[in-house]
Image 1 (cartoon, rainbow, N blue to C red):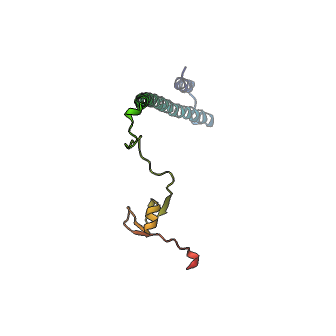
Image 2: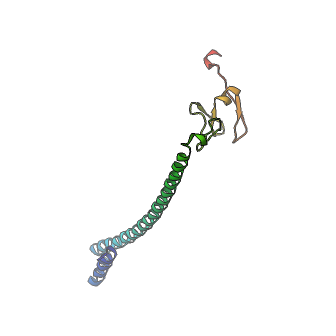
Image 3: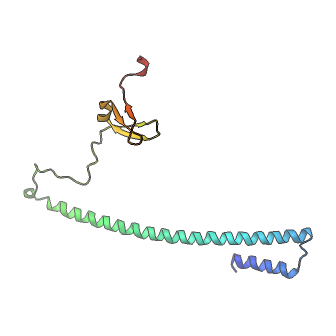
Length: 152
């Protein structure tokens, strides 16, 4: 027997007993049965939501598995291509060969400044050396100084 069936059974028992809902005991039992009915409906909603979320997660897992398979296939193809470069005649050392994306110099320091408009802006050493930059959000000119404020 499910929870909703049990709640309906208790409601039926209460109705069958023909309790006097004018008395305190009858009012209390009626309120408890109503509460059980509400809890049952909410629980039923939670179960339906849980099943829907579970189904969505299963679909996401399948999509991720497909992506993983695709990536692994690409890596296998890349490994095969690398084998082709083992022959010294095929490799020209003067030729620029880019592998993947260029993420820039890993030793570059990135700075962060917060504009008066609230925009947080990242910039590098070159921008710092220029001494100023324009906020892309509000257009205000932000100026940088190398001097300590204590010296002023």
